[in-house]
Image (cartoon, rainbow, N blue to C red; front, side, top):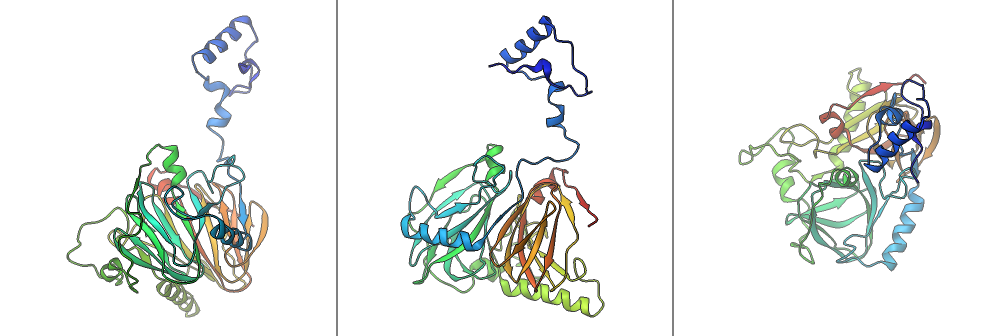
Length: 366
């Protein structure tokens, strides 16, 4: 049935007179797959972002048992490739997208299992909230995965995973799949059915070259689009956050805000984001501290790493515990509050928004 556009409210608040000629005009639009701007302005150009994605919280106590159950029932191998369970935002019509630009999942690998190698245009990372024993092999370089580590797989790098232990392991994945899908830029290629190196080094080749603060190998002077350092270790993240709060105790303005330390993971060749479409950060709040209420253009996802606290999302407060994940859609006000010392991993689409000059932040009075 053709939509009756004659009764749509036009941009200036008035409606044209309903005449046979006007109906014929609108029918002509429909026949030729045309839609007049004056019936769409409120949707196409809202006064502020009106995301279809909604704020939502996923509890780790619900996610992990479901991942464990999938480990018992669903094999890993060609076809499915990964035992990864995507977080589906309730506002996005059943798509496995946590936001219009970001994909997040819990991935589970059983004892002695191997996820085969493949590569894709989409950028990806892994963050480990608990466990160890898995190595991700990126372009032939085995990279240890341990609690608190951020591991990168930039676009078009072959990668697979192998579990070298008798215990399973779960972690979260983040990718720019929705952004890539919307813009038709995706490519995928199968690699080896296994992984190219089953070694289990404590430090990867990339770390041996790049994980030395302020030092750059003279053999690698060209800048790279994504970070050549594939592993950002928890001991360095923890130390950086601890020192920020210690400096605050000494009266130095070192923290992001009062009682709130934060770091951004960066590409050591440029000082910019670790990947061109995804920003990764980490927050630590002292017990009793709170962040400022803010709105941001673009979307963010958080996972609680340790401690207890809450988030205020769109005016609703949610208590949070270890492993819990939540999404902040574009322009939804949010604020963190700590009950104990509160550590959270955070990723967002900020590099996209900034590169396209759509970025905007507003602080909101409580």
